[in-house]
Image (cartoon, rainbow, N blue to C red; front, side):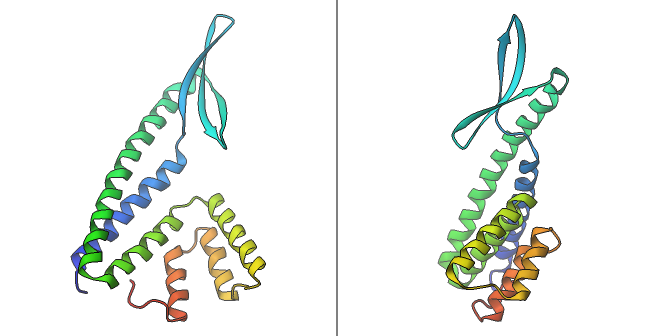
Length: 176
C-alpha cells in the first residue's frame, strides 16, 4: 500500500486512543467536594449530569481510590488530547498526499469511536438507529441486524461489519 507507514502509524494511534477511551469509561468522573455537617466533614463526588449537579457520598475508606481514579482520568484525558493531535496531523498529511487514503483513515476513525463505546451506550445507539430507520421506513437487512446485535454484545468489532456492508453496496474499496 502506498503510504503504508503513515497508515500503520494511524492504526496504532487509533488503537491507543480506543484503549484510553475504554479505560476512561470505567473510571469515576467529576471532582471531590467537602461538606461540613454538624461539625463533621464529608466527601462527595460531584459532576454535572444533564445540567444538574449530581452528588455521591464517598465513604472515608473509598476516598483514596476515588482520588486515584480521578487522577488517572485526568492523565488519560491528556494522553487522549495528545493522540488526537497526532491523528489530526496524519489526517492533514493524508488529505494532501492521497484523498483515498484520507477517506480510509476517516472511516477507520469512525469505526474506532463506535468500538470504544461501553455496552450500554452501544445498546442505546442501536435503539436510536432502529427508531430512525423505522421512521424512515427503511429496515436493516437480517445480516445487518445480526451483525449489530453481536457488536452490541461485544462479540464483533464495528469495523468488520461496517466495512462488509460498505463493500456489499460498492461504497468503499480497499479499507483494511
